[in-house]
Image (tube, rainbow, N blue to C red):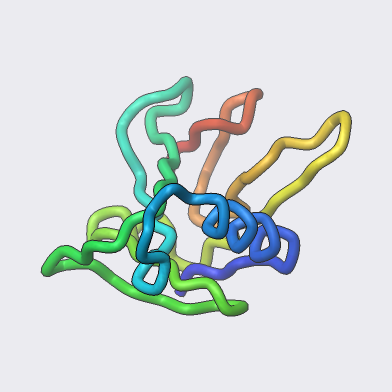
Length: 110
């Protein structure tokens, strides 16, 4: 399962409403893990409306989250968070599977 905090839910819903996609009914949040960053792996988020055959689909806090199977192995029990303000990070992941993260918080390792 991938979880979504209340603040992240509010921001995702707001961004979905502003999306230029004309048919928002099938829109979901796609989360994936890609190689890169200081620690080796980075998170990627997009809005999408097309599922792929091996996608894993979850719904938490009213937000539909889809990820590919490989990324899901890194994201099990991860919570998408959002922080704003002067020192806010924007979206970030609270990932219990990460053994270390870089100082900027943009990448991780397992």
